[in-house]
Amino acid sequence: MTAFWSAVGADADPTTPPVTLDEAAKRATDAAGWVEQNWADWLNTGLRIALILAVALTLRMLVRRALTKLIDRMNRSAQAVEGTALGGLLVNAERRRQRSEAIGSVLRSIASFLILGTAGLMVLGAFNINLAPLLASAGVAGVAIGFGARNLVTDFLSGVFMIMEDQYGVGDSIDAGVASGEVIEVGLRVTKLRGDNGEIWYVRNGEIKRIGNLSQGWATAAVDVTVGSGEDLDKVKSVISEVADDLAKAEPWNEQLWGPIEVLGLTEVLMDSMTFRVAGKTMPGKALGVERELRWRIKRAFDAAGIRIVGGLPQQATEEAPADPTAGMAAPSAFASQTSPQSMAASPIPPPSLSK
Image 1 (spheres, helix red, strand yellow):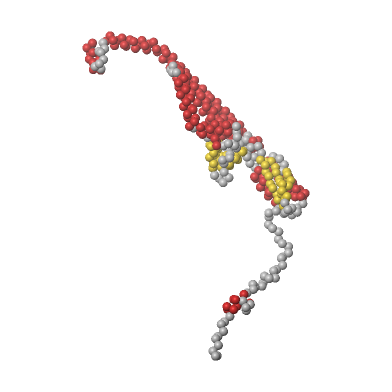
Image 2 (image 1 turned 30 degrees about the vertical axis):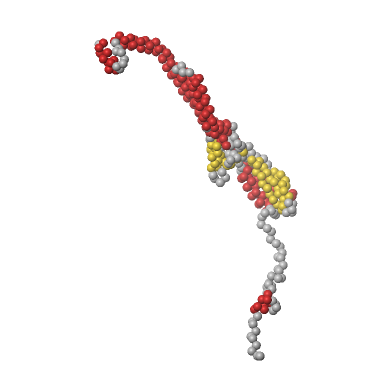
């Protein structure tokens, strides 16, 4: 047997001294003892890692489920008032749904990152790995990535705050400085706007320095009416006030108006015209329709009252202008004078005399 192990050892590595049976048995005994000595630590470490992963995955599932239920509850509350008077005035269901979905997505991502990241660090700590160099390296890498992707980070953070602060939403008409139009999609990095001519603008959230929201609060419907300077001021004001009262009582304008339409007075007085300013508060986004209807009604009322709006067709002259007496006379000709160069050049040459 000793010769067998010696042959095997020689074939395996000529430089290695032969291993005897006693040495092999000693090595096996030492290995078994080392395993018996450390198996408790291995089992403890494995159980700790399994417990960390189980708790992390369970906590992540519970947090995501709670956030999903919260978002669904917000969407159901928005759908409950949709179609009612309160829903029409205060709630935009699609806007609220997209806002809640975006906030829920951000919260779920943050929760998953924090829970799984903490679990990963705890697993590394269970292996007795020094986390200080790892955390320092991760900090340096994070700073480098932050400098390289600062525009992306700026867009993302701006989008998060825009959504959380409800600065605008789907269906709002906004002026973002770089572009203006109706919001058709709100994202964490890019906002999509549809312009007045139908074009779609993709605006990065980090580029938006100021926002003018034309769909929040209330809007103002303002109409300027220009009449001739010879019109009776009291009559014009009375006709406009009557039209404004009728518009405020008619459907559906009574719901779109949030206040009475007032004649603010004269804004401009010229030698041949004067301008009245008429204004009233309306629902957000309804000012343009109210202005059109108000102009329509004022024009019909003025036509019935005999009030002429400046800028229309010119009035026909009542008397014809006298005819020009020189219109039928021909222009004087240079050939009328026999002494003129033209007449002399056109005269025939007299024949030469033959007498001597």
